[in-house]
Image (cartoon, rainbow, N blue to C red; front, side, top):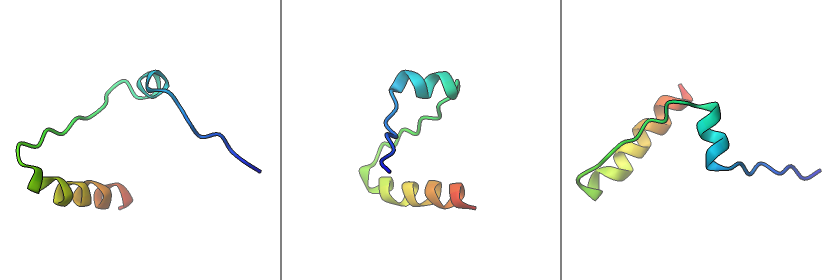
Length: 43
């Protein structure tokens, strides 16, 4: 059974009125930051 899980940006913003944004000034920080955020979400 196939499930269509695609949603629009508008649907995301309606469900989550606050969307966190992380700004990195150095691309070298991107992967370590992504790992930390992913780890924090799985805890």
